[in-house]
Length: 213
Image (cartoon, rainbow, N blue to C red; front, side):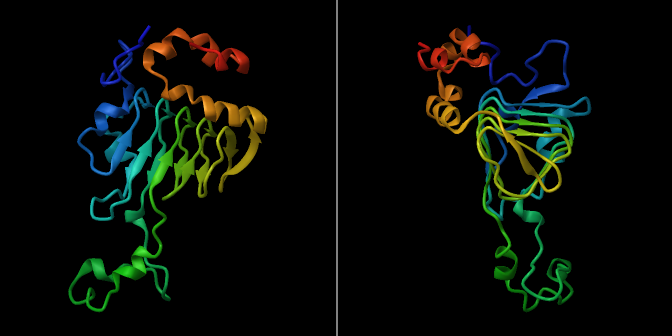
């Protein structure tokens, strides 16, 4: 079993609200998307990178990296560093972008100092409806982001976070199990192996998953 082609835009027949993100991202700079990650939205899901990824400008250079098997619900917003304002002085107003002489004397370093780096969404992450990711956050594999959560800092692997700002509500598994799952990293297996072992991946027996062939 190999499942649907990861290069198919609409992988579910008769259900156009779901799109695989990898084919959408193929011509977008500074963006990497793993296979089988999807976005679900009844309204123009094909425009995910235009409507949901905000302030992602080539000249800034920050990357958006989405792993494999990520599930993203409708209304999720991912803010990138291009939307930040300089915060080293008294005013955060971006005088320089309007020109007319206001650009004179502006030090780009005062703006770049607020940049948070690349945004990374690990594999097998589930992001709920209307959640917001702020620039530069790193979300560990297997994490769950509750609906309407605002993520302002890194999320550990296999954590459930909720609220504004996001707080860890619980860890999905104990530390030993999390370490084992990260070591197994089933999402990196060849798709044929994943297909052969779906019951182990969907199940909760770590020994069965460890011995998958």
